[in-house]
Image (cartoon, rainbow, N blue to C red; front, side, top):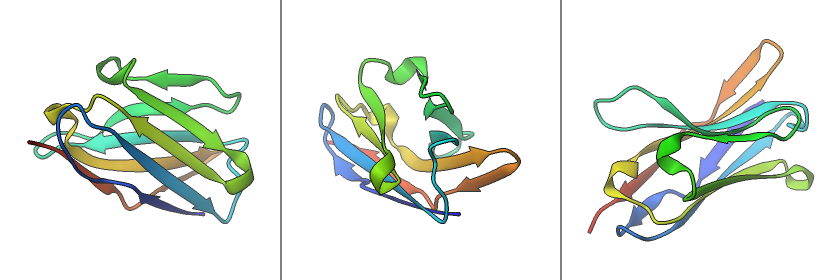
Length: 114
């Protein structure tokens, strides 16, 4: 299974970005899919996830601003990020987890700065 994340970039505070993660080699319809981020000097943290029955969870810091969605037909998950703040600056990673198989994308950098 390979994951290809994209969509990061430089955006001003208050702006929006949409991250994409294309999964190849397997369907993710029965997988746990997650978005994580790692800011400079900090540990990687979970941001959003969709579990095997479609339940979505978000870390408190992004609730109401970020939305995770899944397009099963195109094997792609998205993270729509609105009202971005400087503290959202990080490398964002997508994760595919099913059974004992755990795969991560390469990360995409999001920089929120004026």
